[in-house]
Length: 249
Ligand code: PEP
Image (tube, rainbow, N blue to C red; front, side):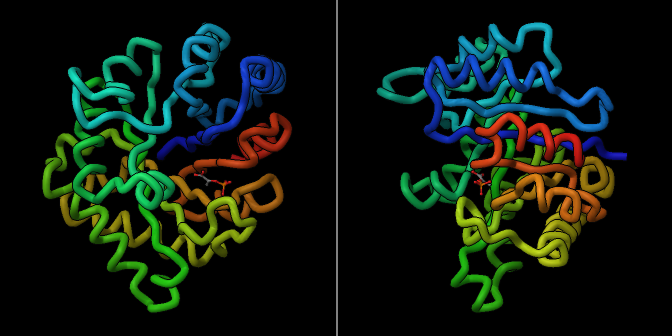
């Protein structure tokens, strides 16, 4: 039985004061059912503050990106070892905003995935099609291409333990959510692709849904057999909403 994971992606939001308020509200209201793991992927400057606020808490810390390089002359970049130094457990790689605004190619995403693994972090590998691709009926081709690019460089043994997030680009931050059927179909396809490599890894890999998940639609998505949690953007910035999603999980 796979555990559910509810991970927040704060994107480029928050301030020191907001971090303190948000984390303290989460810690006061964290569901005690123990049914779902929780994580927050925060902007780099707040890693130290949130690391300290989460000490002894069950909510885990994550980052939103990682350099494909381990160290050296890469001004502005942050390595996996640096993230691990701040007790990060997770790091998002291949978010659609990185792919589309910062040119993270499938190959770079694969390299970032490997860099995360080298540092002992759990990559949250984001995959997803644009609206135009969905309308052209090539959603599965896109998911397969994005996944295959990782498997060009990463063995299934190295992949084991990673998290995948299916995030249809048209649903991210738009208020449009994939229907439970659309999401389940994509998740089952991703799991089938993993099964071609290893039945065990396919059975154990957590596949999260991301794209305007909120308290009102979380339950119908999270009951789908292949949806193992959520990667939550906007709703993770509101403690009550994030807690409500974790409670649904
Ligand atoms: C995301 O940033 O990964 C995301 C899913 O955002 P939102 O929940 O706001 O659509």
